[in-house]
Length: 270
Length: 94
Image 1 (cartoon, rainbow over the protein chains, first blue to last red):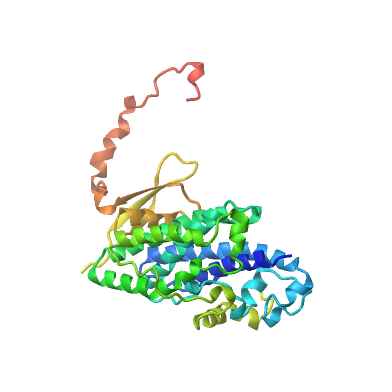
Image 2: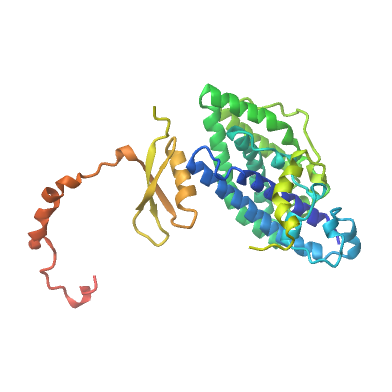
């Protein structure tokens, strides 16, 4: 059985988990009460998407032949092929080299502008991705995508409007928003650089990942223009590696915080 | 010096409801943000499906001190109530 679909699902789930976790770090620290709540809601949306995807992925993993399981994860927790893997195992027991999220998702929150920029780039991408996946031939993926699309529509609206407000705001807000856009730009190339697993997108929907790139560029540039910001060069050098487990220094710290309780108190429940 | 965004009063109509009810207030920089903040703050538990936002400065309220002059006179004018008609059977359950 091809493990590509499982790898593809893990890419999506890991994006949602890591980005959701990052956004949740704002809880209690938002600049104003209403935005603190908005971000908490968004983080929960991402975590909900992660759960749905991990549940499906866990089922697929458990159904693999022992030979396929053997080298699928390098993390020691998965050494036993008899182990019943759950959504929790996938979220809490893998080390960073087994994570397939975009490097963009693990970048630190920085200030408000950086957090907005990170979501801005990601939300325009996931809107296109989930729209496409709503037509997946795999019914479970289609259902998860259709439900997530509603949440993502709001996220995209939220992040785009903040880019516009900060960009077309005061001199200071414009400077910070431009800086954030420029700083995170090198992580956007990875969105459309297909990994082997991304072939699943085309197999399921007839639409390739790279074909979404121009739509993304158009909608992102539209917002940047309205925000009176300068779009970075389309052919700039881009960071890669997340989809194949080569991460920035940040993921280790994120996982240390995210996974500590389950690793120190295995099987811990509320 | 006041650095706060303007205050807005928020009204939500529930799924089965007919009117928007006042649920509270929040700060927002403009109307679009007021609606979105209301969505995030006041509808996260499925409290409603429609939002009205009005900047608080545009709500005018009556003065409680005037209550006697404004409302007491209506107390003893029973002829203003539509209760003296004999309704036909068909309309009994209006």
